[in-house]
Length: 378
Length: 132
Image (cartoon, rainbow over all chains, first blue to last red; front, side):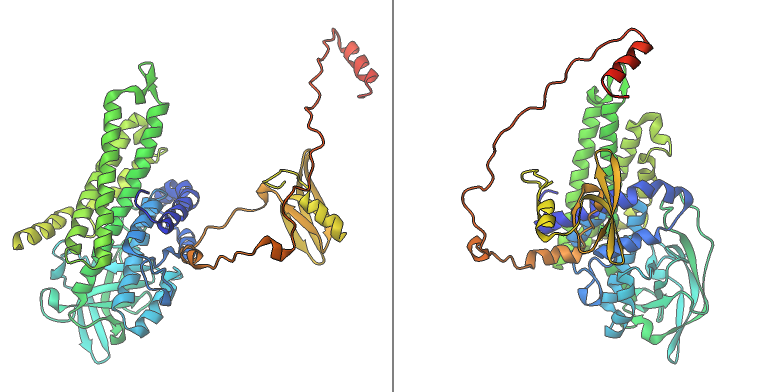
């Protein structure tokens, strides 16, 4: 909590309290039984966590990107998978809040901020992941509607959520032909694939989203035709900070677990904590965690201020934090010895839950592409 | 029990002054029509009283879980006005304390017990002491 304002410390405290009381006791059960904890998330929304950086006039909390990062990091100590979903939800509400017209904002945002309804972000397709701009889902204009055909893959919340922010092709090839449409569950022609079985992130369902002659009113388009890719990328800048923040929370919790274990577990006649190798490893873990946290918070500030290099900083922060934090959680598991491998101990869930943070919202390889392009373009 | 002097008097004094029933150390409160059911934490366990309304209640730790502060409320808290009212305006006398400590004493030291040789002897002793 160094360098935080009084208000930010308060936000952090509420989030940590909520994580400890409402999430941590259930994270193992949610993972094992693949429960999407709707009631708990709604409780979180009542505290203002449903639309943290969404404007207050439509039900959001109107806070900054840095405030958001602090909050997600704290919540992730309770259940990383659920917090990660909440961050995706927040990203979708922000997109509607920022790029929607007044009518769209008022139609969608209030019930999303309260989490009466949940949202999903639909960009990736079976044929386009890292090469997102090559997406194929088509949206043909027919009078007052767009008719969608195609499918999206790996959609977090897919099938259980109510509102879908879908990037689809209304124009020619490449990014400029992509628009952003808001769909709702129940629209004819909108269906879902089977629930995927994952290594982690089990407290959120992941499904394919399928469009078969799905008619969507033109009034559901966010922004202009051809603006969709830009909207998607701007959403992701914040999303990357949020995912990185979730990794920070998991790593923080894991360091605390490792610290506890080292003082309690004895071998060769003394607590593990007396072992210099382990002391040094723990010190390295804490050092890297702090470095990652500072990168993420710095990127959050840059994004909030609208700095020119914000997108690059977000990519660097996401790359660095998700990689480092996975290493930290993995180390923490190692320090637990055999116990670290048992599902009775939380550390393995943190490892499993944050592994995917190095892949989604832009693989860490894509993060490198973004940074390299920026450096070499001068 | 007040957190300043631990005197455990304010609620009781108020009830006496108002001549209202009192339920102190409340750990659970249930409203009925015209009355309130108060579960109290007493030394021997739990005691439940039904009090006619209006009544004076004092709260125990176990009565409630504090709510989480919401994000909007945290932000509003800074902007709430802080009104300073001088004590004189309220007609509350300040100055010399109105409580005088008359005496402080330790509880009597624990007296030694007695070992007995047989059950009959134990029963006899207990009878003698008026315990059974």
